[in-house]
Length: 404
Image (spheres, rainbow, N blue to C red):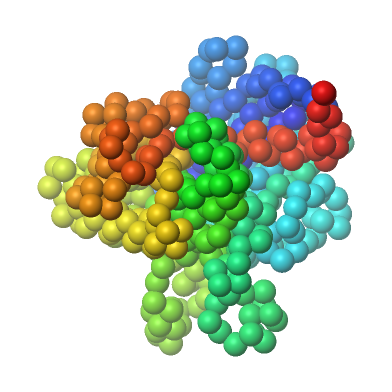
């Protein structure tokens, strides 16, 4: 059986096709990613894929995620690959979904109700689901939710300090996101570090080309995370503002901005692109800052400081950490960001090895702390797609049968 996985981000779209059976770990037949999808960046959009050890790439119109899905499915057709089931990353399930579900007429309507909860994620994923319905009408599809990993965070983390009746009426609470990535990276870090997952304290930094967040993981469970009711809260991101004084929103509304206009500003025109006026891509911003661009330097400084503040808060919350881990595009590749984060932090027992940091490419797990560091520092490439595949396989076959 072939399972096609779509991993739809805010500015990217990953995909993999797995050949699986009930117990097989799954063989990847083809994998790839559409980059700079509907993104405001100096870089051009392109699609790349890897099959049988051969990498190919094409430039194409990626002005929407539905177009990206059509391009990806076109590549599958050219290579004679037809899926038997499809799994989709769906960022925000709200209080309607806390586990993987098959998409049918009933759940489809519920997914539509979730679209406003993550306005630059959920609609994109839903548009890909619609493309698959058109091109593969008889193939079962499943939604796998980023919010599920954080569903059991304690009330002290989940609750907002607003009237309880309002919170209950509208479902206002911290949901948290990037859960598929954190589920994978937490387990992989435990394996790599030799620290049992059930007795661990990890600070995991998922820093993507679109969205970014940090999560405190104790004993394999999320206890707090930087994103909140929506993926807008927390860190500075490519085009999202992150944490913001709510009075700013109220002043915009009082000044005549509509809710949709404010949403557009905070989700699509803020963050790195808003601070720099140059790019939403951190690597481009760092290069420009080094070339003397003052607004890009400010953007890099604000991005870095917000990240430091969350790492520091979670370090205190966990009473120290066994490991601080970086994953996804920026987390895995930006050695300059990691260098900035750990400058003058040795008194905290967190000591980065500058040479190991600079040499790490993100192509494989890398430990980059000095030997005397009390806290391990890791780069762990994420694999959200394998988590989605496992969820879909469980829906199709049930849990794996473990041989004795």
